[in-house]
Length: 338
Image 1: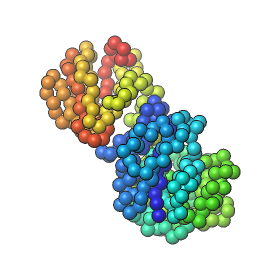
Image 2: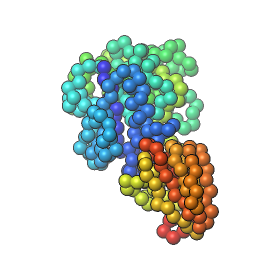
Image 3: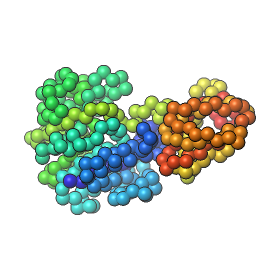
């Protein structure tokens, strides 16, 4: 068995941030989404393969077994199912294949998912319940014996129905974007890519069930979410790009006629340009660890730290780790900022 991580999307739901950074490289709980997934995949002794696109290929240069698709824009990309088929053909994969979409954060591992595999196509499932941040109408939902309540009778079950984004949803159980496909269905997958314009994995699962295939689900516990729904990232969907170079990404968004909200993604080992300005500023550190210099003194900062900068006070931020450091700041408009 092998594992394939799909990281070839263009993150349109993230707006400005998604234009500059692949979702797989967004920091969450001290590391990138991609590294969290790689750690969990290796923990079940699977060999990971990554697919991405040409636009974001530089972010994946330090990883092994990366397939770079030619797409530079959304309208050029392969769909998710076509990316799976492309990897199967390019690498001549001839064994069962676990597929994970690279915009998913899981707090739990994949041990239970793998152990529940019995040879039928397997789909990771999560119960969203009454969570207001997760709307099942915007996700693929499933139906099985016991899906009208929680908890289900067992952690694994056979689907009686599966639909991609329907109103009303089939249930409050949704597909998480984790799949395990037996190699015997690869020819069906190839035919689907050639003959269907619906390239989301959910539509392929529907296709399998319509053919009479038994499809099994596995319920993930703990936390799961699509990183596209992260609230602090959504706040910058329509932000203005201030800087985007090898050191950092900086985007500003006006809050009102007086205030500016800014996000900085400071890359590993880099530092911001030291400066001062006539207005005060407040920094809120969201992900990672680093150091901040204020008037010649440096101190350690990490996630959830808040630092106030006085008017005309010199300041600079250093990322002293091998992962991105993310912080948000708020300040009054001045000069070209805002």
